Amino acid sequence: MHTGHYRLCDGSLLRVDVELGRFVGTYYTPELHVETQVHGSEATVHAWVDAIAARHPGRLARGH
Image (cartoon, rainbow, N blue to C red; front, side, top):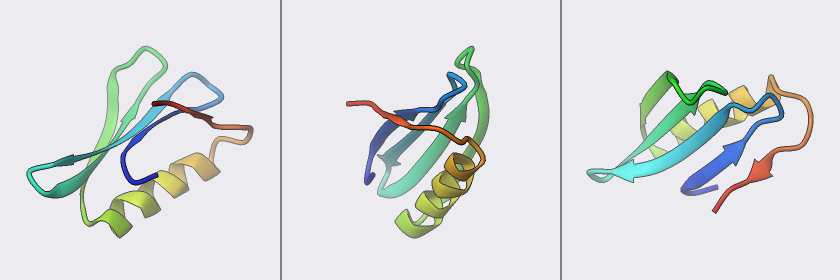
């Protein structure tokens, strides 16, 4: 996932965007409140996303 979002099995949302030339990862609760946000390189943000996804067993639903 370069940019985009995934809905996790518990209803939370992982989103990756590029803002002002850097990657931003945002983790939303099922109620869509921002839980955590990280800024950094593509590798840093994607490693953070992978770590969160690993804590949520089950299939991820890819968004558009």
